[in-house]
Length: 219
Length: 219
Image (tube, rainbow over all chains, first blue to last red):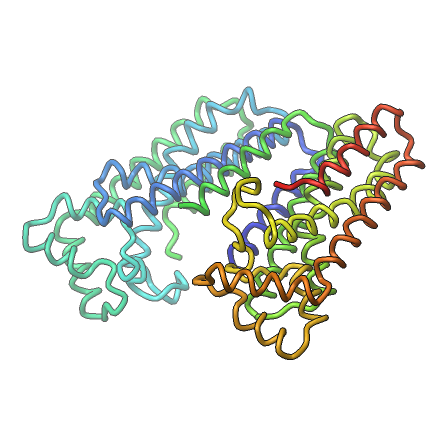
């Protein structure tokens, strides 16, 4: 029944595009295909029980990045009848920002304050999500740290101490610091890309605000 | 993964409507919503373990009838820019024919020749499908026959003898004969409705052929 409710919500989303230009439909369909492929890669990665950094980044890009930032901007441009002109500049802004947004999500999923994220502390760890943060930690881990990661990741009974031990590994491998600097670099890249976009000063200002809001949020 | 492949196929189906009139999209979206609701009612009926005749007919109508005949005809009319004019006549034809088509499916699912249907004999019985045929048999069953239906329906290990026993009940309760006469009456109603439709003689001829092909098929 949950799957059927999801399908039904999908049809109602489709219906909201009634009367919009064909370009908007095309972006919307593309968004759905990318999300589907990202979800497939995620299922595959979880089933195989391990994901290297390059794969984790690819999954994050398709599953979250593109549909969070880039494609909604394309949709807006299509609704305004300006997709041809704005597609590339909005990709140059949205693609790195989408990845930064997802990296922030990964960090909050492990280190976030439950009162602000609305999710129990360490939930991503209990679910065993193969995030870019975890893949980075795995790459930098000593054999003992890697064993600890493998043992605890995806353990639904993981307690507060276990969560703390995993956080410690993720910090001490440098994965947290590397994620923070990658978030900062990607956000900077997104903001720089706006300089060349054929948009008004007001639009640029809003998009700069969005870039910082999406990547420095705490919940 | 199977669910994701289904979702992906759904998006590719949506994409085939690229460039068609808005009316075609609306029919398509309506078709998807009806199918979804029919599937939900089917899941609900299976979970509750019993379906009366009125409910079985409603499920068949939403789950199969409308998307098999009526809505594809509406889609064709919309693609030809004639939906306003043809909606009602095509419903008058498609609605009873869709039900007749589904009733034929029910009969073939129990009594069909596996070489022609491509499905193992009695598969519907093993799956415990709450078809109109089965609901009709249940209504006309003696207490002993009803007990036999309840015991065997949905038994995945049902053997040839068990299938034969269920067939015997479905025949002797009159459910098979009643389904056959309902199929004939609904097909007749569909064909009669064409008399008033604002379509060419050639179109009428093709639709009459379709009505008999859909309801007298053996596979």
